[in-house]
Every structure is written in structure tokens, then in C-alpha cells.
Image (cartoon, rainbow, N blue to C red; front, side):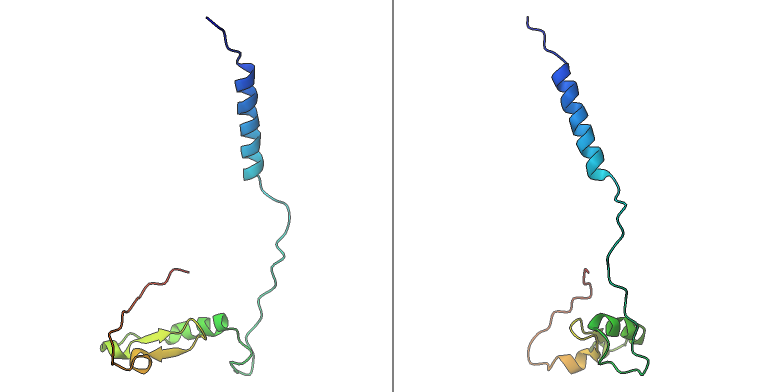
Length: 101
């Protein structure tokens, strides 16, 4: 019967533990993200990014009784439009009310 040494297993377990600790360790560096820009004071939407415009339009969305009057937020430019304005009615439309982002 051959007796196996536990030293290689202990060394491997210790190295795996050190690797795990270094991977999960925190960083003392600060984020270099740019500060958020403020919306234009004069109310012009030309200076706003689409994300800022969309954030401003969120409170303006209204739930309607008629499905054609449902207001939706454009993810491209942040504008609010009704379904009646976006669909011309000559073909079926799939409505997707959940967007993961």
C-alpha cells in the first residue's frame, strides 16, 4: 500500500484559497466616471442626451382606456408618442411591455 503525501494537496488548497481571496478582494482605486451633465436651463431639448430626455418624459406617460391611445417612450430619442401615431394599421403589431435594461 502506497502512502500519499498530504503536502501537495494542502499546497494546492492554499493556492486556490489565495487565488479566491485576491479575485474577491476590493480595490482602493476611485472611479473615473465623468460627472453627469445638468439639463439645459432654457428648456431646449437640443442640449439633452436621449437618456436625459427619456428621464424627463417618464412622468408624462399616461395609461389610456383605448389601446391605441397608450403612450410609449421612444428608446431612440426619448420622445413620447401614442400607439395610434406609431402604427398605421395595415399589419399586425406585437406589443412588448417589458424591456430589460
